[in-house]
Length: 110
Length: 118
Image 1 (cartoon, rainbow over the protein chains, first blue to last red):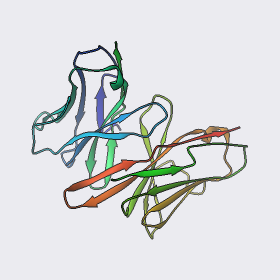
Image 2: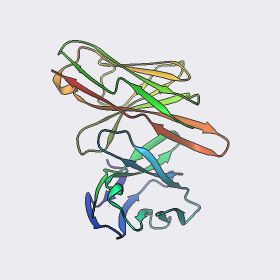
Image 3: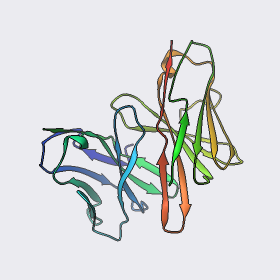
Image 4: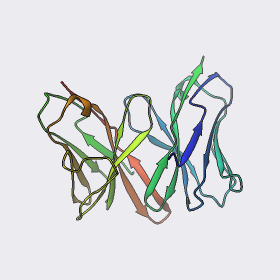
């Protein structure tokens, strides 16, 4: 059973555009929601994270929007760049256990 | 800070041999480390949780005798793939949990190890 559902599976965006990746969950015990960026052949790297008591968090071009009542959160990448082309995973944490989404392959076209 | 290393980065071995992968937290102590397996274009699959000084906790369907995990110190966990076969070929990634003031128990990933079994 997939604890965190992620969409879309793949995304193609023009340079300068906005990339939006969505995730949803059911378990209200989740208390921390990170996003990871993974380049081919590399391990995931923490990109940005949010706690459920905050509705939005912004770090540079990356923003997480969090809707606690809807149990949804999303990653917005503003002014997308070719260097942002990677796979993005959302995750949710309960205790020391992390549950990952299925990943979104983002391609930013120059 | 919060750097996790893995060694080797890639390994090719013959079927039937054993392969050991090391995961180290370089600038922090980690009581908990995770081992993941990742197939091409797929998400991370948790294999086991490694706790320092105690036996690892394996996920359902992961063979304990096949994938031996040892977390002998607060900075080192090892994964040994015993009697490796071609179906064990995969990308193995470890992560370590960083605890501390101002840090919300975040996990930091190693760079991964590409295992190819011939």
